[in-house]
Amino acid sequence: MNSFLPAVFLAQTENPNVFTYFADSNLAGKFIVAALVIFSLLAWTVMIGKYLDLSRLRNLNLTFERRLSDARRVLNLNLGQQAKGLGPYAILTDAALQGARRIGGEDTSERAVALRMGHVENALQRSVAQQTIKYESKMVVLGSIVTGAPFLGLLGTVWGVMDAFGSMALQSSATLQNLAPGVSGALLTTVAGLLVAIPSVFGYNFLLTQTKLLVTELENFASSLADRIELEMETEAVETE
Image (cartoon, rainbow, N blue to C red; front, side):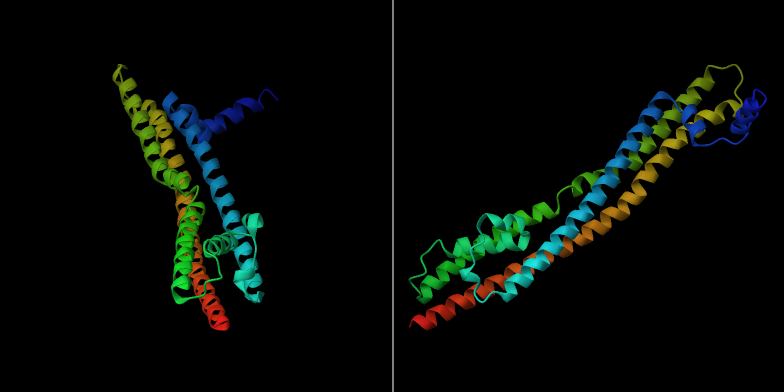
């Protein structure tokens, strides 16, 4: 057993790995690598959570859209508080209906219909803006990690190389063997920064594309909903004449 331990130590010395590079890093390098590990965990948590959240919202929207297509009249719906649990489309529909009901429906003149539709469109615009903010939530955190991780890794490398050359200046004889461990430890921070940034940038671009798609679908739904409500109001006005 005792003869085996020196052999393992010798193998680690002859074949350095990430752990030996980390051990050769200065205090700032170790701190930066630890911070980058935390950022990596945060980035993966945000990416996975955001993907699941967007998928859930899309499923809720599709379910409500099918429900709305089966309804004979949108103006007869009364969603109330349950709209929040039915997804963004339901929230938009509830906001549009509240806007339509701000003015009594007894007056079916052309001016009254236009006035009610103005309230409906304003309510839809506000609701679309609010839902867009929710769609884009947490993307700032992921974007900051994508941008900051490589620079943080570069900072650790420059700092480590500076320390390595500074310590060599205090020695009587400078050799590559003495300089190499410090430089390899310094370069580890750049590698760590890239390992954090590369998957994060792919995830960020994918989630950003999905978010833009959902926002476009949200705007299209709001437009078609406004058209349907206006058509129902005009039909109601014709029937009462």
